[in-house]
Image (tube, rainbow, N blue to C red; front, side, top):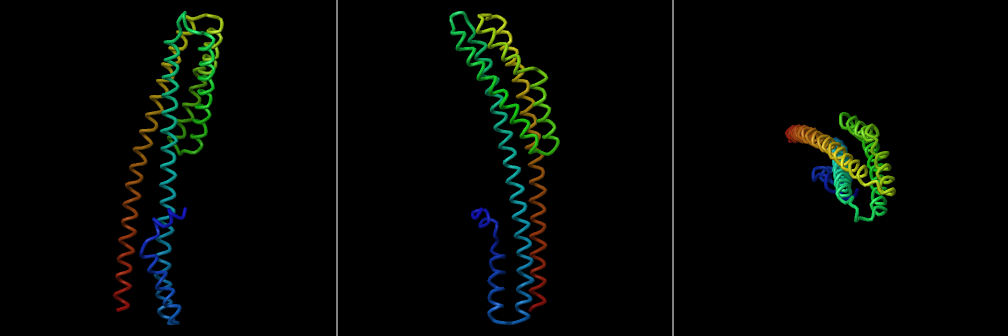
Length: 219
């Protein structure tokens, strides 16, 4: 937090604080009043920059959450496809069943993370993430993974392989939807960032003009 404050604390704010301190030492009522007014303006600008910086950091954190979810779902789909290809007579089917159990736990964790992320996001991203979590339920991903484990433990290789391949396709499709959600979020984030930067530039220009006007009146 200290480092963040040091980055957004402007030289103008520091100068205003120094002027205020000097005016108070000189016991000049007019100088104190002028310095207080300048300090209030700089302090307000500082607070606005602080609020905007915090808001931008929160948006970056949301994008990082989406990036992590995309990677997790991609990895799950890939691992499920790899397991489907590994279902062969010479393989240790009990070992594959244990791997499928682990994938089922991963799928449940991703579903929970999608729901938590949806609560942190604003619409439309929140609704899209919530729908993806529901889609995992609608497609019975967890239950079908459990059936694969049972089939492997009872040496029913063909249904296990077919089901694993189908689940891998479902996960790849859902991963594509999640990737689209992320891309849409990034586009909206870029547009908002552009608007915010333009707003900050206008505020700085307005403050600069105000300070010039004050300086002319004081001259």
